[in-house]
Length: 180
Image 1 (tube, helix red, strand yellow):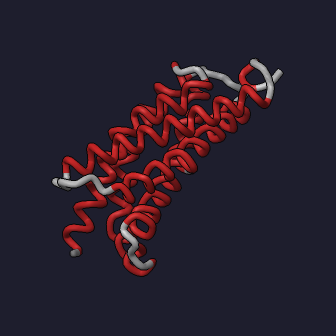
Image 2 (cartoon, one colour):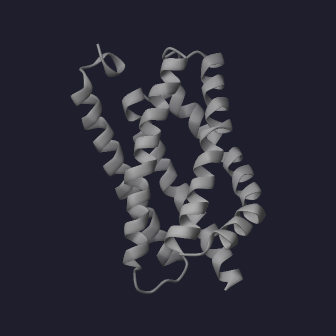
């Protein structure tokens, strides 16, 4: 028996591909909304494609494997104590890592800034981004682990991340505007 009691590796590959595509599409829509909210008149296609790449190549697959690993560690249990442990583990590992990766990717790849500038922005702004993340994502994580089936968790997470992505984009954009 394979993934969540269903099929084998081809089933997992289809779901991985679906999650990657979904994360890429939602990253694109989130970026389009962010660009419009920040007053960008002409859509920045390079930036948009780089955000699609981040969603499809990193966020979707990362979430796919994260939720599989968490379910294996905790043997798929959904009791209150186990869900709390999953949420805490996710918030102490994946959350800080993903926010860091986003800030590095946005600064170096999307904006094309040198590491020293990106490092200074991270040093200054990462703590507030992470604290904000910890006020929002644990609730999402709880709902996700408690009520959403394993095969749909990345998609649920990606839908919520749509709004979070807008927040991060607006934060990153406001930081870039104040430094320009």
